[in-house]
Amino acid sequence: MGESVIPLQDLRRGKPLPPMLNAAPPTGHLADALGRPLRDLRISVTDRCNFRCSYCMPKEVFDKTHAFLPHSALLSFEEITRCARLFVAHGVHKLRLTGGEPLLRKNLETLIALLAELRTPSGHALDITLTTNGSVLARKAQALKDAGLKRVTVSLDALDDGIFRRMNDVDFPVADVLRGIEEAQRVGLAPIKVNMVVKRGTNDQEIVPMARHFRHSGVVLRFIEYMDVGATNGWRMDEVLPSAQVVQQLSQAHALEPIEANELGETAARWRYADGGGEVGVISSVTQAFCRDCNRARLSTEGRLYLCLFATGGHDLRALLRGGAGDEQLSAAIAAIWGERDDRYSELRGAMSPDAGGGAKRVEMHYIGG
Ligand code: SAM
Ligand code: SF4
Ligand code: SF4
Image (tube, rainbow, N blue to C red; front, side, top):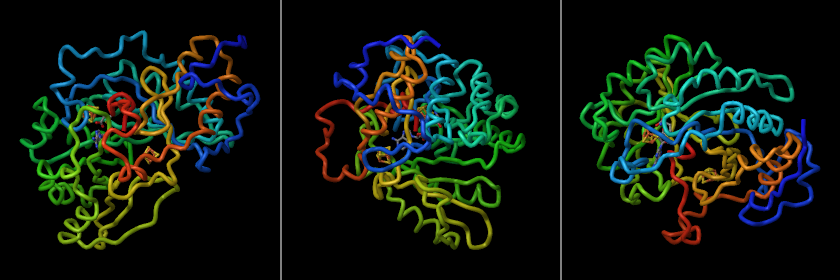
């Protein structure tokens, strides 16, 4: 493979990369500046979406005049797979496809099939999953499963049709998402998780009905605190319902017991129904930061590497990919970037002014995925 040397200075906002760039071999044991390993890669495959959830892509901002990325800017399936392979050599064992709405990317099954062929350094298959709004899942579940997808997470913010239609802001019905979940269950994309973003005053009355609906179904329902991602959703702290209050509401309806985390870096705190009705989770990114074990990297639709959901800038891997960098060079760049990572936004949020980040705009959620 050609190893043409290209200028890398622009990779990190003008700072030249350290000399180790051309030396670091993939070890599977990278640690960032705070000692955190790299285990989870979230890949955004499109910045487009057919929903306009007010907390993510408010209609007023993402209207007909909004310029989405042209197709040529998107990483191709081959480019994504090449990056993923190098991340896997550095210790990633979980890949999550996201967006925008990932199921809008044409022929996504082809990408899944390519990713499904990758193996960890110890020869294990990867945990490949996908987060979707479920709008076209009923139609695509079988093909996704056949291509090698292991499981899915479906976002659903309410069972009440009126509330859900208002929250997705494109009048999309609950019934179609529920059909998608059922089909995903039928084809074995399990365990299925359902994500509900809780906004105080908007859908908090749906917490118990959602729990009741998914009890005894095998689906793991997770309640996510409404987050201050991006710069367009008009986030206010008083619209965040702390997870502690979610758990309190749930336990008044059904007795709950805490359970251990499955693995280090897990975002959700897990609970189970004492009567064996299954499991729920709460993701408290606002009230209880979990940066200490955060082992997630995010690859944007156009190939920028983000080290935190709240980052204001990403590292341009596409420039390397398209500039002729060889695997060794790319791999060393990933190692160097991760090695300097010291992001822990949620831990610092309380101490920051509202325009933290030096006034720079935080990246939008639909661009790097959840
Ligand atoms: N379109 C897909 C979907 O909605 O599942 C994938 C992308 S979406 C950005 C990924 C996840 O981020 C979804 O579960 C969504 O609910 C969540 N999300 C988006 N904006 C959020 C916010 N402001 N606070 C908390 N979660 C958010
Ligand atoms: Fe689309 Fe998902 Fe964002 Fe909703 S949360 S607007 S479905 S990308
Ligand atoms: Fe990870 Fe950043 Fe979220 Fe902290 S704020 S858990 S570092 S993504």
